[in-house]
Image 1 (spheres, one colour):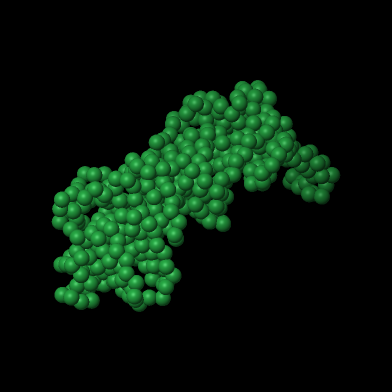
Image 2: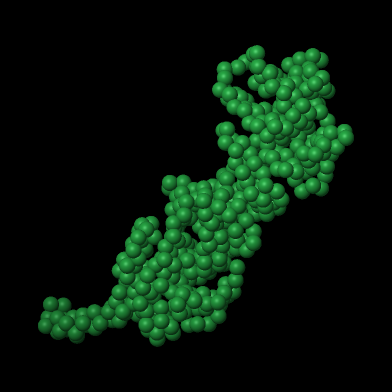
Length: 475
């Protein structure tokens, strides 16, 4: 019978001492193989630079002043060298680079995106995702081995962080007091009520800071959009905390378990009008002159003014030019003799030179026109324009106003009126229960109560939402 070996014998110990080092070496080799599987080496052909710290970059963009501190976060890249990408980290010659900002090459003529998936906003406000570790060179994507992968045309912004983007196409912004242009390869930080920009080279950063509002305008590829809609497409808003999640990777969202398409911003071009004469408008007692050829546009029924250095909401107070009176909003019209009410669409204009039968009103683009009866034209809140001579009466006061004059009552204490015949503006602070404005036939309107003055139409109220009425041009 064969004798069994004692596990505690010297022979067993020798075997273990021989096997254990082999196991250690095997595990190390497996670890190296796994490490190499996760690790990627990317060789680049041109000189360039990289950002080493995203948070420092954002801080530099936020603070005006010397750009010397940019040197602290820039790492020059030599040609025919390589970077190592592993587990979301990017290193170059042992130095850690930012994994959220692309690498710039050949004087920023092209970039390398090191992260796993890149998300872009297109110039028609769609969203495009591309597998990362790619070069973007002259509107085309190339793999890290420089083989062409996909078209890169029509891309507007690359998402870096929630509110930091890299511009890939030129676009312009018109905001309060100024206009500016964002150029390709500008970094753009949407920072609440402002936009910060930085054009970075390997030695410095040229920076800009601009205030914005929801009504600021963004022009992309010849189409103009409202800032509120532009930021919404980016998952942002004009707020102190501007980050609402950032750019999403899909155009489809979910609401109550149902798929919902993302709203695409609509350009305001179709509503844009140019006023071909100088105009003026009174507001709180001040006369504001508007130069010839200013542009106006409509958004959600509200009209805004746009020119080289201003983008602001227009009050629904009549605007006067030498040839026309303009109605900057949706107005209503009532003939107090019969009590019928109609709507006049935004920027209806009335020719100031009267015809034999009265005044002619034109739609904004002059595709329709119609003779106006003796009428009260109103904005539904506080402004009333009259198409014939009227008398304004309160307490023991009485004024006569020429045709196409207006009267305003703010609902509390401010009574204002403009006499178009004398080109004079009047303003009073009064406590009043009634201000009656009558035509020659005695009919008219009480601007305090908003009622029509007609003995046969006692208590007839003027509607406060004229946009709900049928169009006068279609009657």
